[in-house]
Amino acid sequence: MPYQRRRTDAAFATAWDEATNLGTKFLEWEAIRRAYHGTLRPVFYKGKQCGSICDYSDQLLMFLLRARNPKMYREKFQLDHSNDDKAIAPITIVRFRRLSDVVADSPTP
Image (tube, rainbow, N blue to C red; front, side, top):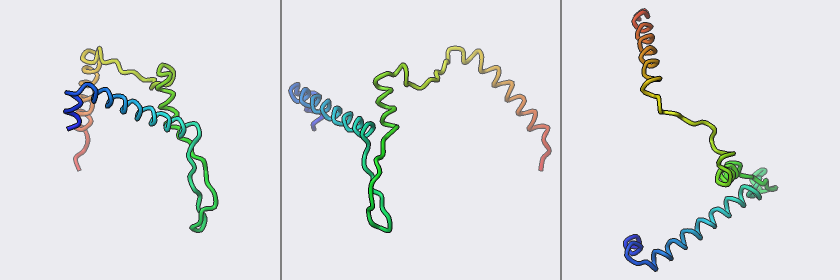
């Protein structure tokens, strides 16, 4: 029902988008807080809490860096499929032929 109303009611759609954007901002702030300031994790000894350790999220920090500077922090590999049919197919055929020769020459148990 709300999805249908969003399609037909412009004011509702605007409010929906604002709420979604605000929710996303809160998620981003929490990710930044966890990456920069960490979260406290309790430490227990013999069943009783004796302290805490501050855990930082390296993974969240990497996501934030990639979002802010993708050229610097993106994955460095790129696949080029422009010549796949010309370059890879003959090599694959040769490998399959070699593999079939190995299998044919191997002794049967």
